[in-house]
Image (cartoon, rainbow, N blue to C red; front, side):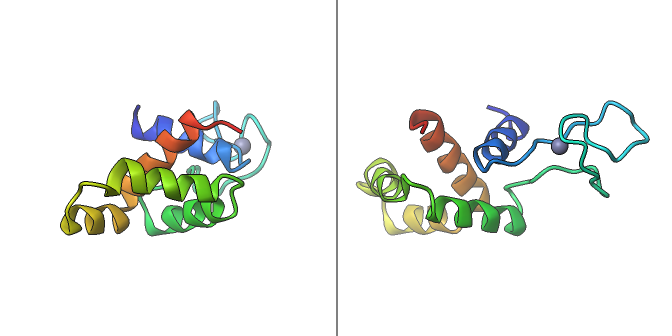
Length: 106
Ligand SMILES: [Zn+2]
């Protein structure tokens, strides 16, 4: 999984368009025709992206399943430092959401 592949998958899970531009001088997305001033897609490694992903996961129908899955998969048997690192890593949270949603399509 590349970072871009992960972010594209998570964007589409959120029901958003992973914008693409064939014209290097145009800000109009080939797929949705929306104009994006910065020609960028969501980056879930940023705090802004983390916030979007966290808000999405909290209202996801599998939120309770996700929390239990995280506890079982990543917390049991790990020390406090590992758990704290996991909780406060934007990159790690995006990776975990990606893995869970790939394994649990809805
Ligand atoms: Zn688009």
